[in-house]
Length: 67
Image (cartoon, rainbow, N blue to C red):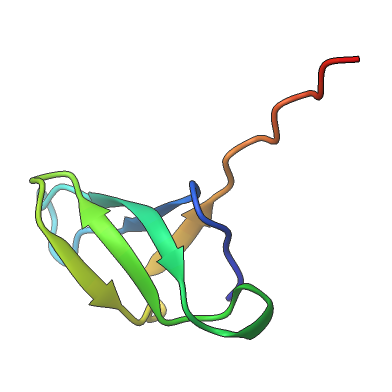
């Protein structure tokens, strides 16, 4: 799994009816976008995160450069 600062990590709920969790990646500590990531969760707390098979990365689209 590879990610960039500003991407989102989505962790799928483990049981029926359990909501997904979402976290903003604020730091990438692995080489070439690999984990671990420092993330800010949707409830406001920060943690170091190592994704597992229930997590996906939602890419943050690059902003077009101004000419």
